[in-house]
Length: 239
Image (cartoon, rainbow, N blue to C red; front, side):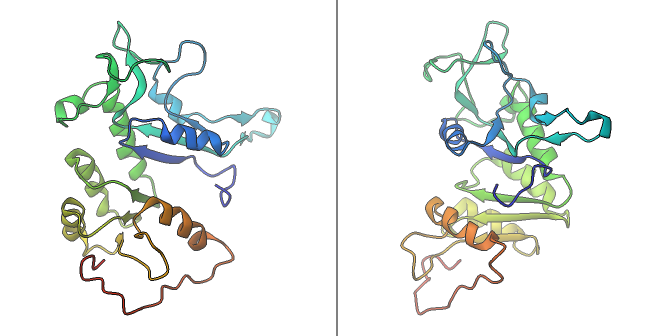
């Protein structure tokens, strides 16, 4: 976010987690975001909320709409523990709602295409597909082991697009991640970042390592980012 301008498009975050981790993280960092929910006392899901921005309208005579904040869209494609279905099958927020209730809007564990065609999952998966088709898009995959074939298919459909890049932080030792990567590793826009570095205790695919190295790579003051070769044995995790 520190490297982005207010005019840049909103960052899109897609998560299969239904906890509130991302909301707490975004709010702690004072990042404006939306999960598709409206504002007000009675908050309900509306997919068009992902397309709105807060803008400064004081200079409308210049026909310039200046966004007032850098912002993010948080797509919870498997639902959320604080979403529930009301009597009319609308999605509403109820922060004190029990996640064990039958009305909680959490994607079923048995992932069937039938459920993905229902509200709000159909809208969320459609948004996922639309965002990946945007020109010059890059998808960073973190903490996802490729167990959901529906998600895998949406990603795979865009790999043939030359201006789409897929960067996977993952372990080659995980079967489904390995199978997906090996299926598309011949494409120049598909990359798997894994294994370990000699000076780091955790693997490159672990979240604490990712958030440490990404700013180093993205920093405008960093012309090169070199990984020194060593005698470390990577036989168990060759990537």
